[in-house]
Image 1 (cartoon, rainbow, N blue to C red):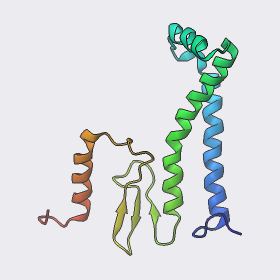
Image 2 (tube, rainbow, N blue to C red; image 1 turned 45 degrees about the vertical axis):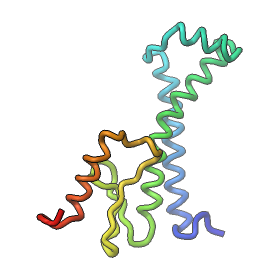
Image 3 (cartoon, helix red, strand yellow; image 1 turned 90 degrees about the horizontal axis):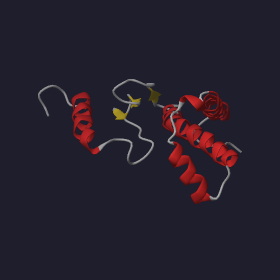
Length: 140
């Protein structure tokens, strides 16, 4: 039985493996650079008291929190790579105007991980940029 019906298992496994490596790297970085981050000592004290935890438990939780923030940033890449691996689709990578393209069906896509990834103030600009990509000159 395949993991997902529209991808080869090897492709899916490779994408998942890369994301897991990113998660492991995020934890290693958070652990290594923990003391470089300035954390409000009052916040630490109130968190420990509010959550009834000792410093060691708080520390483990904080490393996990920092790691999780980095990992979540990679989940968008996970979605983009999965969708870009489907037949007819191309993953355009990071830093391009759009994330995905299906030339046969003349579709472009910008993948967002969460509903609030794009600030409302930037929605109009993104819409206009996407419109410029799909509308021939002078037809807007």
